[in-house]
Image (cartoon, rainbow, N blue to C red; front, side, top):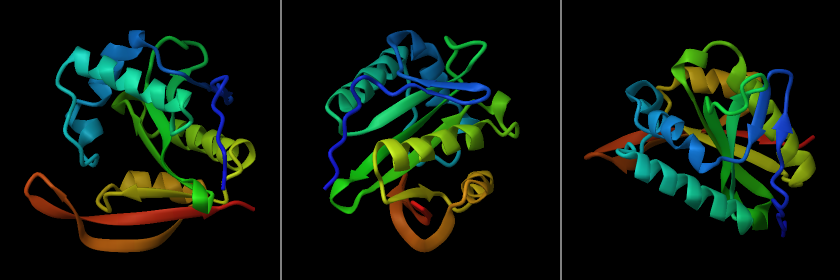
Length: 183
C-alpha cells in the first residue's frame, strides 16, 4: 500500500504556471471559484456562500495535506503567483489500489487557453513519479464536454458511464469516469 508524504508541500512549476499551497489570502478567489455559476455548472456540490466558508475550506484542505490524506494545489500564473485562478487536486485516495481521483476548477477568464491541460499534465507527472500511483481517475458530469476533452488530451480514456448514480438537488445525475494508467 502506498504511503504518501506531502511535507514539504510539493510546489509544481510549468512553463506558465505555479501550482502552490493555498493560503487564507486566497479566500476571496476561492469564494469566487466555489460560488460562480459558470465554474460550478457541472460541479455537483453546494456553492460556497461566504468568505468565512471559503477560508474554512482552505484550512480543511491544508490540514488534509498535512496529514497526507489528500492534496490540493492552487493554480496561479508564474508572473502573478499571488492570484489564484483555479485549483487541482488528488482527493479520493485509494492507497490500497495505488489510485487517486483528480479534480479541478478554473476561473472562466482562463478557459480555452490550455491552462488546465498544462496543470493536469504537471499533476499527472507528480502523481506517477512523486506519489507512485498506478492509476488516476476522474469523475465528471458527462454534459461537461470541455472537461472530457481536457482529460482526453492529457491521455485519459473514458472507461465507464454510470446512469443516474449520483443524487443532487432532488434529481439523479449521470457520471462519466475517465482513467489513466502509469506507463
